[in-house]
Length: 356
Image 1 (tube, rainbow, N blue to C red):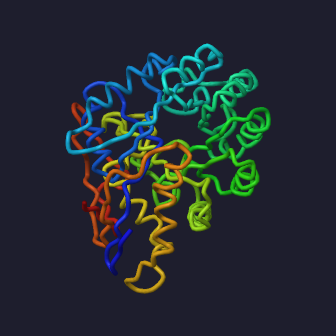
Image 2: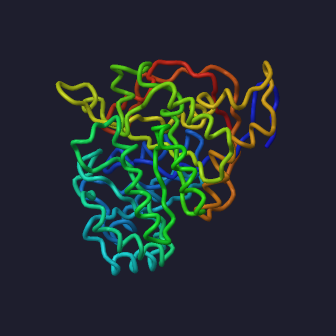
Image 3: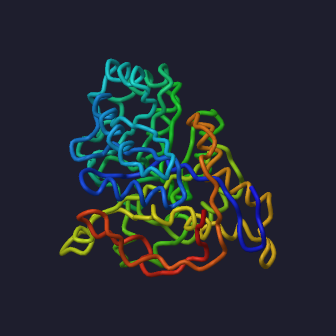
């Protein structure tokens, strides 16, 4: 990693939480994701029908691989969607198909979660089996009881996560952490060596007051307070090997965002993901005017690339990128096949740009 007063050379990042959707939008979404500074994408399984079998996952990943532009080298992390009916035979077939990650959605709490889990005690056996097989379990950590307010659903999920961690030997991922009240509990669970937290760029970049009324920032879990954001940034600064970037870059057609009634939830950040993380974490990188020290840059690279490569057993980054301290204005929209996608912070300017 090399750096000057205005630029930092960093390896391509790993995004273990990417939504590439289905149909004609997939090719453009793959290209835009790779242009945003990543070389590895985790394929979320909450498609229209859900990726419930090893065959579903293998077919989907094969399609995604076929859409990688020739100028890019890309790795993919395939995920199975776990339901209350997922059994040992399914996990055995996943292992044979080289699928080592499963995702658990709380039913009705987020996009396309109608196949999700409502009664978590019913998946304890499957999570235990996943631990035996060495399959990692990724949680969308919001309480499945819909009477629980959105603002508190993540915090109140803590006992469920602890139950699954204690009952099994599985590696557990708490995805898109947003509620800083959880941090002491995350640290306690991380002492097992089997617990990881991913953090999005949008939860690190802003707070609920700043984006109030902005449909491009309406997401699940919801963006929290300034205090939450500051504590999450501090957590990254502490350089824990169990804290990992994970974008949850969730594109929707603009017609699903600007609607009468409730809009689709999701913040689309993929095309400018690496510079958005740099913008959100610039306070960690800069210690003197114009100076970006190597040790702080190492923390950034650990968070965006190295930590994930270690836990997922990935090869070294396929390319290096230049993060340039130069303003970048986020486009008002992206043409994504038949969709027009309005990104997070559309029209706003961030402090960092990306060059090869």
